[in-house]
Every structure is written in C-alpha cells, then in structure tokens.
Length: 494
Image (cartoon, rainbow, N blue to C red; front, side):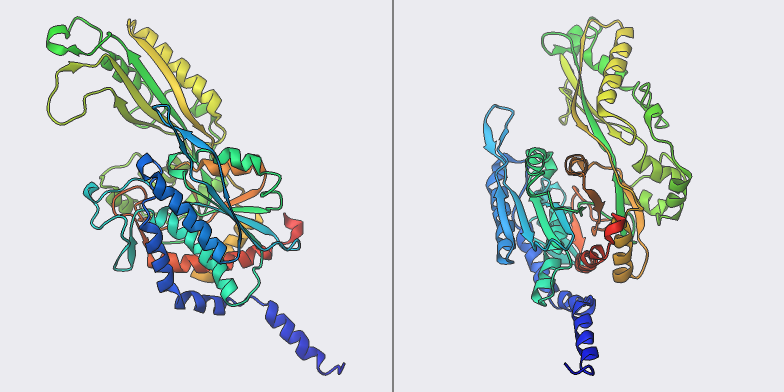
C-alpha cells in the first residue's frame, strides 16, 4: 500500500467513529412534528391503570409500545406478569411488561432504560382546559394526560435510538428497554419480574436509566435521590352502628374524637415529627450537601405563587429543599368513614379510618418505622382510656433511593447536559417515591441515574398536565448525547 494513502484512510476511519452530534441534532429538528404526532397517538390511549374498566386500553397501550419497538428492529418481548386481585375477590390480567433489546456487542456497555406508559385518571370536568386525551399544542406546550408522566420521556428515548438508526450510526452502547403499565398504582408484578430475570435479561446490563421525574427550575437537572414512603391506616372502632348525634351525643365516646386526638400527636404545627425515634434515625446533613443546596437554582417566591400559598414551613432555600428531599415528613391524607358529602348530616360514625404517610429517607428502615408508629399511637390511645378499639396497619413500606453523584454516570450526565443546553445541571433529589429505583438497585446491583426532561411546571397528576415542545425535543437530543457520553466511561472507573 502507498504510505501516502495511509493518513487519508486513518482520517476517514477517525471521522466515521467521531460522534456525529450535529447530524443527529439536525435529524431530530427535522422530525419533531413526527415526534409530536407520536405523542398525540400515545396520549389518545386512556391507559389509566387505576380504572379496571380501562384495562383493555392499557393492554392496547402495551401492544402499541411493543409494535413501535419491533418496527425499529428491536428484540421485543411482552412479559406476562400475572394477575391482579380486586377488592371484590375477582382477578384481572395485569398489562404485560414490554422488554426490548437493541445491540449485543460485548465490547460495549449495556444500558437499560425504564419507563411507564400508564397514567393517572383525568376527565375534562375535573377542571382541564382541554380534552386530557387529545394532545393540544398551546404556545409550545403539549397538554394531555401522561404527556410528561411518562409518555414523552419514553418516546424521547425511542426517538434517540431511532435517530442513530436513521443515520446508519452504530449505537454507542447496547440499549435495553423495560416499559411497564402499572406504575401509577404501585407497579404490581414488576418486582417479581425483575427478580425472575435478574440472571437473564439484566445479567449484561451495566447501568439503569430512569426518566420518570422532572426539573426543579428552568435549569436542567440530574436526580440522585428519592424519598421512600410508609403508608398507614389507623382505624378506630366504637359502637356497632352509626349513631344520631342528637340522640346519643354526650353519652358515647366517639371514634372520630379519638382518631383526631391521636392524629394530632403525629406532627407539631412547625412540622416536627413527634413519633419517638424517627428524627433520630435520619442521616445528618453534611457540609457538602449544604453547599450543593446553596448552588441549586430555586426561587421561593415563584414556588409559593405556583402552589398558591403566602407562607411556607421554612423561609430559606436550603432549609426548604432539605425538608422537601432529605428529611421525613408526616402527611394526613383523609378519613374514611367520615361524612364528607355536601350538606349536613348529624352522624356519629361507628368506625373511622385515617390514612397518613411518612416519607422515608436514609437511614430510616420501614420495618422499624412501622413498629415505632404502631407502638406510639397505641401508647397515646391508651392514655385516652377510651373503650373504643384502635388498629394500626402499614400498607406500603417503600424504601428511599440515593445515588453517588461522583459516579461516572453523573459525570457523563453533566457532560451531556453541557453539550445540549450549554450549562451545568442542578443535582437534585425528589421528595416523592419511585420504588422501582430501589428494587433495581437491590435486585440487580447495577448503578442507576435519574435523568429527567420534564419541566418544573408540568403539572404531573394534576389538571392540565403538559410537556413543553422544547423539553421534548431538546430532551431527545440530551438522550442522544448521553448514550455517547456513557460509551466514553473508562472501564477502570466503574
């Protein structure tokens, strides 16, 4: 071979292997209307996992996802995860979990992307300005139930893989998908599926990526922690039937009075949890964390305006963020058996059940919290010397999840955000609970990152949920860039 030709060949080879980010971005920009139409099609499917009457729509949603991935050439499976038992004893088939695989190069990392395509309930009469199942573009915002949580992020990952394929560019990493249809109601059956496939589907996975969360402000974010959740029922039972307050009021010790009395001992007006042992178990706030919170972009006044209050529990940013993310809290959600309809009804309920939760943080243990709460409420109730009966039950015990922000996954995330948005991301935690993150961590032992593209004002679970066109399209570019950045992680740093 002519030695003069060799440099040209080497140049061509290096160009082929260079990251063709500009070309990929151009592809995304030129296909954004197709992406919006794909989201419109998905939002139109009423995949409400809480409504058993919508279960056929949910099954159809999973088939649509599977078919989309099949048409892209993925190795797709619809995994049967069994049945769901309804309160009346009947059983109903759970929606199958969609798994897919793109690429099997043993010399590349393998990433697994988790998402869900079920949604919260939504009706126009709930206060929506538009039909929640007809994606509506208003001033660059795409309104529709599930648009942000979690259909657009799932589609953005699919579009990212499609972009590489369309330009005949090898995926820089092998990509696997796990898409479920029961996340909004507790991910029934998914834990067992992950455990069952730990040594098969997940055996070659290096990293897991979750994009089921959102930014804190207009600045892009990487999420490294979520709170867990212990959900309780406290039931007080008294007379054998409801009583008339005019006839029996003043003669019986009322279950509602007992219940309100013990609920009032859970938390102080200033937000201090009064259950012994809970505050003592919380991991202390480190100096490094304090500094991270100081640097995060967060406007307290905007936050107050957004939720419609004139006073918050804390007045400075660090305290507020810390209590939103890394301290536990007690929330009382409702009382079953109480009269709550419009109008008046002079009833003494015979049995009332309070529903409350305690958000878990490191180093709290749900089993210990269950004992602490149960023992405490019974001790408080005993002091009332009431003849009524108290029963305390914990129905959810989800653990918190926390990642190492120094892990190469997060360094890759920072680089991808910098490339796409030309700024550094905020490193944030979520106050809510994404139980599957902890399941993935405990069962597979793989490292996890949460990479949101949803906006801070998307209205998840609320009326007028939306995904901005900007976040959807730029989020697709972020995922494209991130796959490349992950491929650059040095083997020695894992």
